[in-house]
Length: 507
Image (cartoon, rainbow, N blue to C red; front, side, top):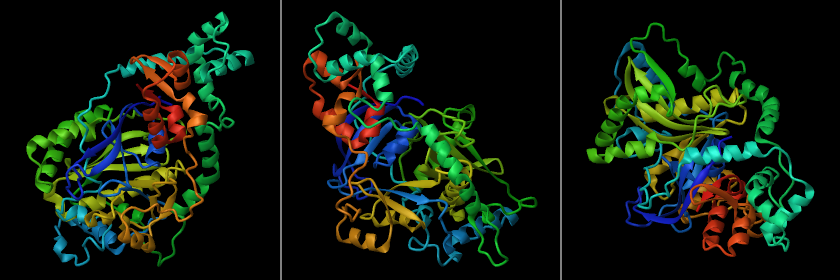
C-alpha cells in the first residue's frame, strides 16, 4: 500500500461550471502529492473528487449548485431502448460501414437516454466540467524522498516496543508527566517509529485493530465470486433479452471497420507513445464541442494526464491493477475517443470522456459509458467488491446534468451520513423542492467514519519542514501549541477518521 500525502487548502470559491455564476461555487480543496488507491476510494465515498492532483469536495449546503456523488451498480444495470439503439447503430456501422444519422432515431433525446446529451453538442460530456484550480501552490516537497524515508522508518521497526515504552509514549503524546526522564527523552527520538506501530494498531484510545484490507477482500471474494459469475453468465432462454455483453460481443470477422479498445495506465510506456494523438483529439473535441480557445487546451496535462495514484497490482486485484487509465477507442488504427478513468478497489470512476466530433453520429458519449459499465462487470467477475461505476456528480439543479440519473440502479451519496440511497422519483421530487437535501430520511443515522477530536486528533500524522514525520499529539507536546489546530480538525472531519489516521498531512 502506498502512503498518501496531502496538503489541505481550506474553503475555495470559483466560477461555477454549471450555472456560470461568478464566485458562487464553494468547495473544500486539497493537493494530493500521492494517493493510495484505497484512500481515494474512501475519499470519493465521502463526496471528494479529483482533477489531476487537485481534490475537491463541494460544500453542498452553501454552493450554488449542490453536487451529489452518483454511482451505478453495474451488476444490476439494465439497458434502455435508447441504449440498445446506440449499440445497434455502432454495430451496423462496424459491420457494413453505413452511417446512420441520429435524426433517424426519434427517441434519442435527453429525457430518453442516459447520456444522450453528451453527444448532442450541448456542452455536456460523460462527466462534469473540470473545476477551476486555486491560485495557491502546494508546498514544494520531494515526494519520492518522503516516501523513501517513510518506507525506511517502517523497515527499521524491528520489534514491538515494550508495554512500559508504549505507556511512556502515550503519556508523552497526550501530555503525561514523565517527559523529564532521560529514558523518555530518548524515546522521543523513536516516536516516529513507534507512531507507525500505534497507527497500525489503530491508534491510542481507538477501537481494536481491524482486519487488513487484503484479508477482508480475500474473504469477501471467496463468498461472492461464485454469485457474481452466476449473475453475469447465467443461461438464457430462447426469448431472453439481450444483455450489454451480448451486444458488445457480436461476431466481428466480416466487419468493414475494426474497433479496438486499449486500456493504458497513465504512467506506462504505451500512454507516452500515444500521448501526442490523445492530446490532438482532446484539443479538437474541446474547440469543436465546447468552443474552448486553443490556449485553454493546455489544461489537458493538469486535468487528465497527471495523477497522484501509482499503478498498483495486488495479487487479489483485477488483471489491469488499480490506478489511473485512459481507455482508448481505435477505429481502423485511428484514435476516435478516450475515456479517462480511475480503477479503484470498489469501482471504476469516470473522470472525463472526449471523442472525435467527426464521429458524433455514433453517440460515442453514450457508447463510452456503456463500455465502462461492461468493464466494471468484467472486473466484478474477478474481484466481487469491484462492481460500481462512479459517474462523478449528479447536479439536480442543473437540468442538463440530470442525464446521469437515467442509468438504472443509480444511487446518490447522502452528504451528511455518507450512506447510499437509490435515486428514485420521490428523491427527485424532494430535490425539485429544495436543491440541498440530507437525502437520508432517518434522523438517527450518523456518519460511521466520523472523526472525533478528543479520540483521534493526537494520532493524525503530520509532515513538518517537508521531511520529518510526527503526530499531532507529539507536536503539541514538544511545541506547546499548534496554530493549525482548527484547520487540521476541519480537514480530518472532511476526509473521515480512516483517511485522517492513514494519510500524511503536510503542514
